[in-house]
Amino acid sequence: MKRVILVALVIVFAGVLFAGCKSSQPTEQPVNITINGSTTVFPIAQKEAEVYMNKHLNVNISVEGTGSGNGIAALIDGTTDIADSSREIKQGEIDKAKANGVNPYEIPIALDALSVVVNPQNPVNALTTEQVKKIYVGEITNWKDVGGPDVPIVVVARDTSSGTYEAFIELALGKGVNIIDKAIVQASNQTVKNTVALTKGAIGYIGLGYVDSSVKAISYDGVLPSKETAKNKTYKLSRYLYMYTNGQPTGAVKDFIDFVLSSEGQNIVDSVGFIKVK
Amino acid sequence: MKKRRAVIEYLLPVFAYIALIALLGIVFTVLVEGLPLFKSYSVFRFITGKEWRPTSEPPLFGALPLIISSIFVTVSSMLIAVPIGIATAIYLSKLSNPFIKDFLKPVVELLASIPSVVYGFFGLVFLAPLLQKIFHLSVGLNGFNASIILAFMALPTIASLAEDAISSVPVDIELASFGLGASKFETIFYAVLPAALPGIFTAVSLGFGRAIGETMAVLMVAGGAIGIPNSIFSPMRPLTVTIAAEMAESPVGSQHYMALFSLAILLLLFVIIFNLLAEYFRNKFSFKRG
Image 1 (tube, rainbow over the protein chains, first blue to last red):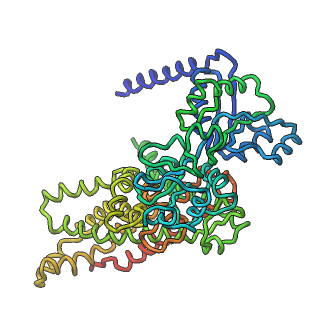
Image 2: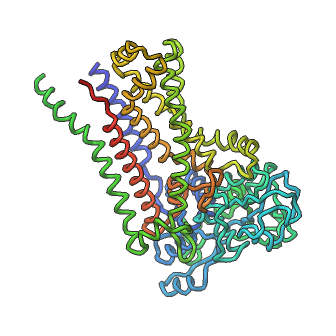
Image 3: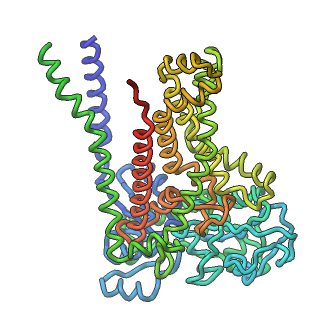
């Protein structure tokens, strides 16, 4: 019995050694790229990095989702190669970067359109900016006040730390506005969609990529969310998603950014639910 | 041979103390990460604040709605699970025949091994629409839904341990009761159950621990609203849900991060207080022979 275990151990050990040798034989110099920033951009960056690393075995990309502000701060401090951001860089940040000898270079990589969705049974098809705002702060609490049936409105929102929450506050409600505390809070686009699909009086907001027949996207200020209306900026709840680098990207970082902007990279953008920019 | 025994004698206590080390490690970590919050945010405001707005300017860390939600959900789940659990235990140990017991007890215990995410899914897809229909609610994701799911999760612990407690009551107590002319039901309720009480307290306190600490299922069905709940049918945000939902997005070392660890301190305190109470009652009702 002991001998069998010993033999098994030797085989396993040899296997591990062999595997270790094989993967550590460098074909080229290993390259590390770090990406830090927006949690909204995170799924795009993560997926792009995975596919890219499969093609370039010598490149190691680490992706972190810490928020747009943190990502840009990291770029300014020189602790990241690429900063993901779901908003444009602010003038104050540019000044700070310049003072640090960093020159932020903006690369729009995708578009995002927040779709306001309701239950498919709800006859309401359109809301104005004002109505959405009043619903989310709790001044309108019944669908009959916006041309619907006499059904109480169930407000569905995202966790306060999500990028989508921040974007919605910024684009639809205005900075510093607090959503009513009775709102159902969900942790992801998917669970917001499920809740709206299962709840007759619900209203929620999700990324365009998540909209399907289980919920009904309504027109916002007369415009329905779509790839076209997001691209031509007529849909007000749309925004670009960016990657920022220090100066024009070069070397491995440039190669990765080129991949993100290539048709394959843009198809990845599409597959994780956002809108291509190329 | 002697050597081997000596090694084992020294090793076993080491293993036994691993649990203690883990516990101390957890308490230490939670305190170290959480307590610095109170340098910049008063404990009083933290515990009695009615608004949890961790990302507003300035951030508000009022944990009261979260505390109330946790208590609401846990207590009501216990109100459901304890009677059902004890009734199940009495039936299994004293009233059913051995064949039924051999079949039902494993079934009840199987409930304990269902992953919590499955419970959550069940609550989300099945229970939520059902509750909406029965109680004419505008939304099925609420404290009541969470309480029912938690009751099912705590039920196997309570039923199984209570059954063990009742079964291990010495048979002479039962016989003495019969000898005094008591009926079967009188015997169960006035002789066997009181003797099994300490064990039942253990069962309930473990069930309570399961209910207050459960995260995933509650995250899926409780609704997550940050307001103070005004009824069991309000969407709620218990402590565990807040920690789980927000930890991934809060920058390490920020006030928000510390506040989440402070919520964990509160949870630990609740569990410790409840366990001490259970211990007290366990001793108070402990059956003294001779």
